[in-house]
Length: 466
Image (cartoon, rainbow, N blue to C red; front, top):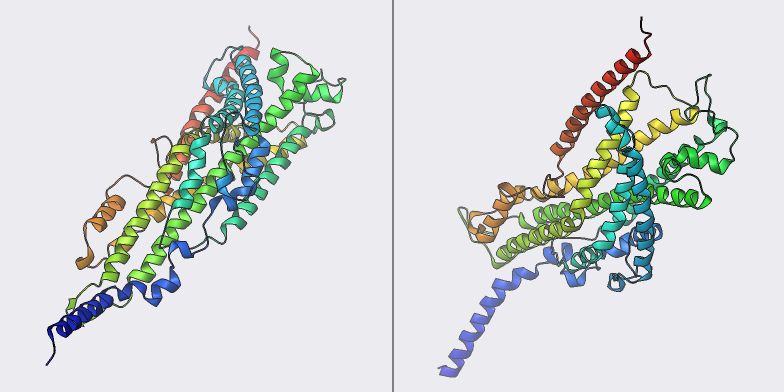
């Protein structure tokens, strides 16, 4: 005979054993080997990958963040009175003066049609874009740091370290900035008399600078709007030189920066979908041929999928808060310069003024196109992979389709598009890239009509009167 205490002890042991069986699957070898808990994986520190690129931004004066030379994102901080911010203040003041001269020169001459207006605003747009980049980073420095902190705080289960990201950051940065430096070096060759003439054509800048010293010739030809408004002075020449470089390399920097951040983010979504497919669709444990009883492991695995996807969507929101205005203006500026350079190539009266210009013009055009394509394809993949989770959700067993799965299903199927946004006006997707081509062709038709009108007016003016 068993005593009452023995019976109670055996009952508690049985209940404990059944509880262990329920939660035993939470520690299955499949989950532990492929996707260990976040605190056991190597820390996914975005700053360590982008540290070299941030140092480049600090040298250019674009990034007013202190601590970029240290090894941890915890050492990053933003202060409006730090040495990094003071450097940005100096750049902004000089860029503001440079932009004001460009605007003043643009409004001096009367414009007769859309083509002349489009040509006259090229220099102001270029300089104002550079001023916007430097000012924006200084005003939104705290928001910029939140990206690194939020990235490090994401506790993703369906994830793994992006081992190729650092290599991609280095390769793309070297290629783009090498091209930008060489392209700009070729442009400067055009400002010297030795490269003026080709096949007897009239030189682009006229003969009046032929006897000038080299530094004056560079200033008069390379910074016409400075010379038209304030005249020549050695200090003006130095300021004009550096402001042009800040704008040019700041422009390249921000486009590459956004493209690389998009690459880092879309990889997270890509891994999420692949890891979920490998984990959630293992052979189902069937108690009978017609009945499937989900385990606690299955429920937790699907619930974790919804949590991971929600964290990544929140990361998109954090990045959009900072990059959205920059993305909108970047596309606007890039489209303008693509249209203007394409107009030069389509102009039947366009003749290269020198061998240098015949090299620089196509190089510059291809450089801008490649940079836009890089940014667009990386940003479009965020939208693609963020919505690919629908392929996983559609295969969710009915027994596990609860409120969290329904919420995820609704977000990726009928909710707003997920991805990089330009001030809410657009989300970068693959169809959006085709829309850009449509915009370019429309603007080009308007400019070509203005070109035709301008040429007809010029011919009527030069025609002798009876």
